Image (cartoon, rainbow, N blue to C red; front, top):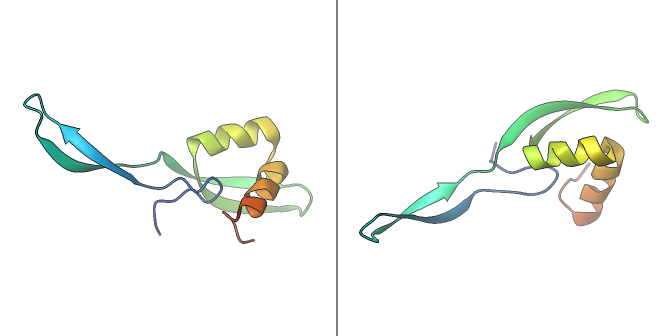
Length: 79
């Protein structure tokens, strides 16, 4: 499975390691992804998502149903 947040769409970014001598070599910046289970009270079931830690904070603030609804509108989730 790819390293993409299922709610926000965050994915691997590329950049450079820059040495003291200003030599540049390619590197990757990985998103902080966690595998987490969430309970959806409207449907009465659990779902497992691979989400970034910022998405977990958003879920704690707004609720899982609101975040899933917004992700469907943005096209990040196809459920």
